[in-house]
Image (cartoon, rainbow, N blue to C red; front, side, top):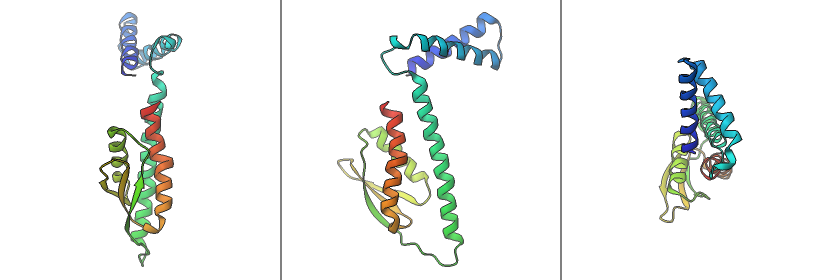
Length: 159
């Protein structure tokens, strides 16, 4: 993927030099022409075409931003309530992620989201111990993490 991205950037810069157009619009036109050329030649690249992975990264970033906003409002609503109805606790979360990079990314995303905090990773790196703001919703939190964060991370790292 990195080679394809660098090749596309090189094509864009060569386009700018050939057209003597050193502007953002000239660069964007060169980028689109490079993308078109690489689309035509993508069968010669051993790895999958890089715009798919870029799109998956953008979706993961959007998911993180959405989760930050939603969970922040959930925490604010709990703070504003006159009586706290929370029962904080710890639960074990079994992950399907295999590599250390995937696991680190999941842990970072979970820690950045208000209401959850990673406490420990088991020695076999399959079980995460997570502190939740409301342990009564632990099953929902597990399903939510699996359906959002894990799915998006696997899309980025395994496609």
